[in-house]
Image 1 (spheres, one colour):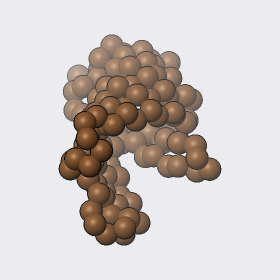
Image 2 (cartoon, one colour; image 1 turned 120 degrees about the vertical axis):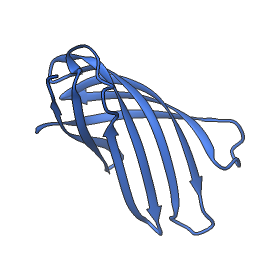
Image 3 (cartoon, helix red, strand yellow; image 1 turned 90 degrees about the horizontal axis):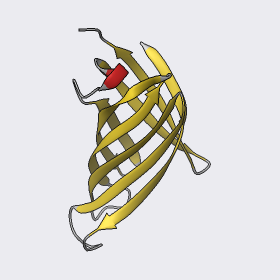
Image 4 (tube, helix red, strand yellow; image 1 turned 180 degrees about the vertical axis):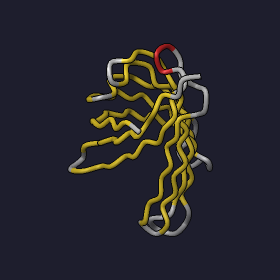
Length: 128
């Protein structure tokens, strides 16, 4: 498996009423580092009545270059927070790669440190 690392900026824009459950947001991201790309997506989220407990799902289309290979792919997110303890899965949707990213598989991690969003992306490109 190859490893890509870098940072990203994200803009989330609420859609609909702020009190709606689930809440819906649009996502716009700019990735830097080994993944030079932009993405557009949508997220659904819900917070519970217990502080620090929530969940979200999202889909985003990533377009750019991964380690210099141009193309696009889709990421699927599933995250929960249980009383402040997070779990997150961000996975490449099977067979969503285009261009030189056809056959892409992998998992992405996301960390936030000092207000900066960082990613780690373990991936491989499986030739058909």
